[in-house]
Length: 245
Ligand code: NDP
Image (cartoon, rainbow, N blue to C red):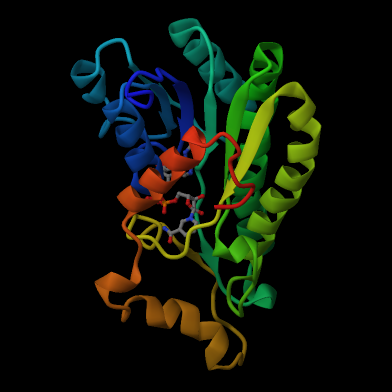
């Protein structure tokens, strides 16, 4: 089939866990090549043996512009081109806006927004020169609506949405597509990697509810990250992919 022989080259951030890991496995599973970036790649390094010549582990921090640039360069050197760039690395921060410290706010922007920008600055010259490619931007339902207790997380994802809306128009004439990925809660390490502001103020229960209720949600309330990956593969295959998934 076309899908099995498409042979796309991917650059995926946050590939060591959750949605990024499932995306990596799904792409490899249908014959594509994947450069898989994360700070800890020990858990996925064995994929190089399972998929010879089609998997490259890149141990890097998306906050480090030079490391990201080197990673993109290595991916292009290994695979010859980039077809899909998945800006997926990120984490959640919960707490009332007032309670989030300056350090926590800057830290979450550093990864969720400046990390995305680092990847874009490194990868877009490659896609632009090719006159082809697809940028997948990791947003969230919280990139569309903000709720009490997730203001800073939403602020980072709104930033990603704004960048992406501009990118669509900037890149369309160059033959490069853009899709925002906006999952609801997915069963990944997102929950165990959450940062929390110190609850100091007398905010009502709705602010605390998000974090309080997560542990009580039944498993079926969470999306299977493999299902997210399958939906993303469909988007990558589409002739006219949606701006938002
Ligand atoms: P996970 O915590 O399972 O995965 C996050 C990935 O990001 C890991 O591979 C982690 O790898 C990587 N990562 C984090 N910080 C950095 C960094 N500084 N540099 C490089 N890699 C980094 O969470 P998900 O799979 O759920 O999250 C993926 C994306 O999906 C995130 O952007 C998240 O905001 C978004 N999302 C998730 C939802 C959910 O409910 N799960 C809902 C909506 C959106 P390592 O630690 O090895 O660096």
